[in-house]
Length: 303
Image (cartoon, rainbow, N blue to C red; front, side, top):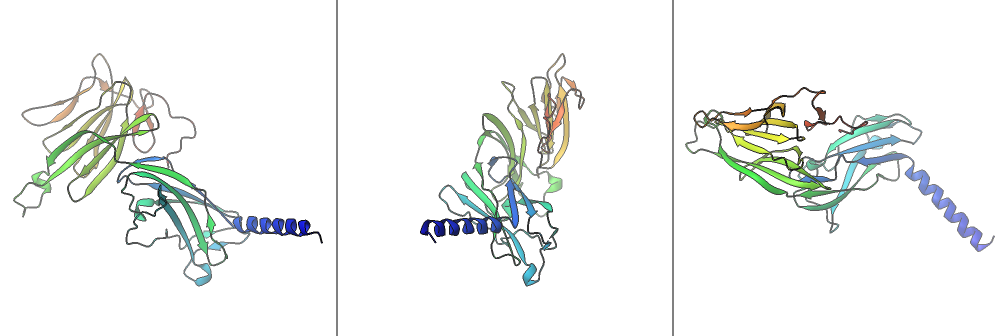
């Protein structure tokens, strides 16, 4: 047989073999964003499809043993430090029927200490006792930012929440930071002390020349009034652990909503404007609780 024909035949056989190998378990990795602030929870979505023609069970038996793992690397191709936990995402008990598609939402911070600024790339792969090969997903990229501090305040923990054995007032820091997501500036609230990060939350986006205002009340709760448009204002109240205690939406009327603080009682509230009506004056966008004066786009992905 002609040497070129043999070479071509070998190439085709190798290509078909590799294609069949890659067709057993198909993986797709998705991220809802590409920009995150430090210490913010990062979730990835894995879409797994069974193209093997057989039911694939993930169990404890050697032939059923399977793992869903990740490969995360920074711009220097180094793997970030990993916490002292199992490196694989637990999918024991999962059974994929032939042709079935299953989604998994994975908290990436549980498996990697993503504390350094910079750009990262990630892919997932699955191993299983039924197959000789592991199967890899597409690669995705994301970036972590420190952000720019635009407002901060140190507050004492209220007496009712502090240990009775402590004679010293303990403190926490509220910090509002901003990062750019493309051309859009996004605001984050971080609550921390010198030992711990208690909460990191996305709170909204910059809107034109409208300014966010913040203040703290007598119970050390943080009040934020953040414009969602020139007419609509989000009002949030967070406690010192980052729990959202109150959330309302106001609109501009003959007066503009603003935060006011009673100098005697320390009470903070919104003055001016009037309460806005959901789906009339504003629309909720996604799980972050952002509000917009425009309706959400069709097929908005909020995972």
